[in-house]
Image (cartoon, rainbow, N blue to C red; front, side, top):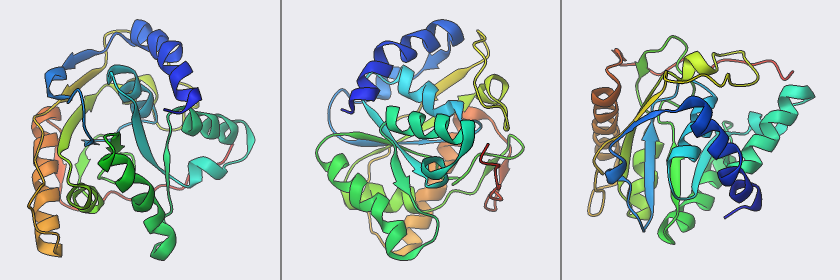
Length: 225
C-alpha cells in the first residue's frame, strides 16, 4: 500500500467522511479479501476521494495521464492526489502506451488488490450515464476477478467540473455497491466483452437511476491551471 495512501486513509479519509457524511449502501458486497474491480459512474474528481474513503481496503484507480503531467496549481494538486490514491496511469494515445495500465493492474488484481475503473472513460458532462468502454470487462476477464458495480450520487455538488477543491458539505452524497458480477470462465472476444460491459452499465444505472445515453461521453479538454 502506498505510504501517501496510508497516511491519507487515516487523515484525509477520516476528515472527508466526517465532513461529507456519505450515505453508504451495499457495503456487504465489498469482499474482505481477494482482487476485484469497482466499476463506477463518474460525476466528479471527488469520486476518487470518496471511494478511497468509504472502501475499507486499499483501492487503486485508473486515471488519465493528464492528471500526472499538468502544470500550475491545479496540476500540482492532481499529481499529489494521484500519488496519494495509488493511481494507475492510463495513456489515451492507444497502442503499447495504452496497455501499460493493463500491465500494472492485472498482477495487482491477481495478487488480491482492488482497482477502481470508470467505464465511461471520462466524467459525465451533464449528469447522465454514458456507454461504457470495454476495458473494464477485458481487465476483469484477464485477471479472473469479479466486477462490483458502484453508483455514486451527489459528488457533482461537492466538486462540480472546474472546481479545484471539494467543498466539505454534509448529507448530499450517496454511494451504493452492487452485487459482484463474476467473470471467471467468460469469453474474451469482442462480442462477449461488449455484452459484459453493457451488463455492468445496466447494473450501475439501477444503482444511480441516471438517464442512460447509448453513446460514448465526449472527452473534455481541461485547463492545466
